Length: 209
Picture 1 (tube, rainbow, N blue to C red):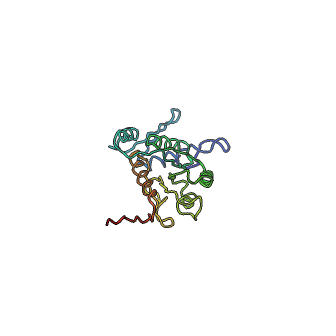
Picture 2: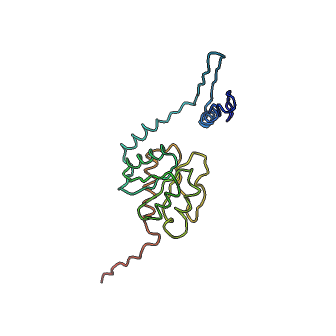
Picture 3: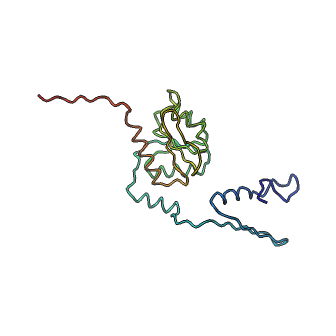
């Protein structure tokens, strides 16, 4: 029943029970499933997960906001994530931290926005699902409106998205589930680091007689 297209219905009446997705999610979190079924009475499926001592995300984020963590000063962050729910959550987190978030669900639409007004954005926050088509243009593309944005990639632990070198700079990665404090620290560090000129002008000190 955990096979992708297993169903007890006739051809054309059903495409599957959907339990393959459930099985994948549970096992990815080191859990297990207990299934019981009796003819004429129905079935029950119970999911078991290992206990965690970590605080729930909501509690931990609320605690982080009460501490002295770096905050933005109205900088504009490009958020690129095809999942609307995740994108909305990121926008809310950025707003709490003092940033202005501009969300996009499609890579080309985001790149077009950068091309039209590249100076508008201070940093790009990308989900791993859009890294391959978007990152080279935003971070290390050829000279022009696409290039030069600092980039943070949000990826699952163990994922290879955003790893390695792109052009001459490595990409900063944040692991899911994203925590408010980790996001605040990464944003502050990258924005400050990229606001300093690579070759600042020489300062001539006045010589006293």
